[in-house]
Length: 283
Image 1 (tube, rainbow, N blue to C red):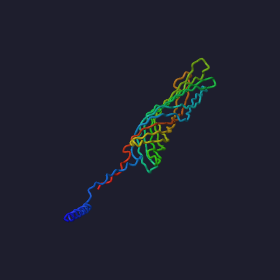
Image 2 (cartoon, rainbow, N blue to C red):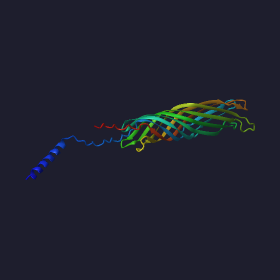
Image 3 (tube, rainbow, N blue to C red):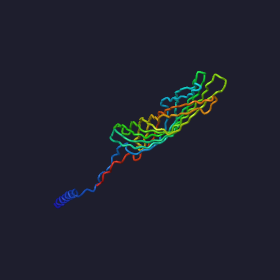
Image 4 (spheres, rainbow, N blue to C red):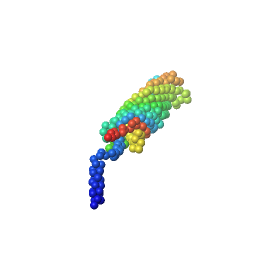
C-alpha cells in the first residue's frame, strides 16, 4: 500500500519539473546568419593595359608642284597605307545607373608604330619630263579621352556591350619630297629637288565600341575587345626646290589626312569591384 503514494509523488514531481523547465529562458544559440553574396555591379574605378593594331582608314592626300618658267609641274594624290602595332594603358570610371545601363569615362595613351611610305613617278611637262614623289608618314603615339555608354542584360550582369566617342590627339610626322627632271628626254642631267618635313601634335576625334566581360570567379578583372576609328585632322605643308641645275625653282604644296582604324584587346583591374552586402547585427 505504501508503494502507490510514493509512485504518485514521483510522477507529480516529474510533471512539475517539466513545466518549470518549459518556463525557463532558452539558451540555445540562434542559427548563424550567412549574408547573401554581393550583387555584381560595374560601378567603380578601373585601370589596365591594352595591345592592338592600327591601319589606314582612307582619305587620300593631294598636292602639286609648279615651275611656270619651265612650263613644268604636276599634281598628285597619295593614299599611303599606314599601319602598325600599338600598345598602352587606360584608366576610367563606370557608374551602373540601372541593371541594364552603365555610363562612364575613359582616358588612354598609346605608343604606336604606325607608318607608311609611298613612291610615285609622274609626267611633269610636255618635254618628256618626269617627277618622282616620295611620302613618309609616322604616328609615334596617340591618346583619347572618351565617354562610354554600356548596355547590360540583367541575366548576364558581367557582360557589357558599349559604345564610345570623344577627343583624340597624337604626334604625326609627315615628310614629302619631289625630284623633278623637266628635260628627261635630253642627256643633260637637269634636276630640281625639294623636301618638307612636318612634326606636330594633332588633335581630332574618335568613336567606336566594344565588349567587356568579367569572369564571376575573378570579379576584380575584366577583358575587353574594342574598335576605334580615329581622325587626327589634315597636315598642310608647302615648300620649294632647294637644289636645281635648271636655274629656276618650283613651288609645291601637300595636304595629308591622318585617319586610321584600331582593333585592340585589353585587360582591366577594377578597384573595389563591388561592395559587400551589409551584415545584419546579431542579437
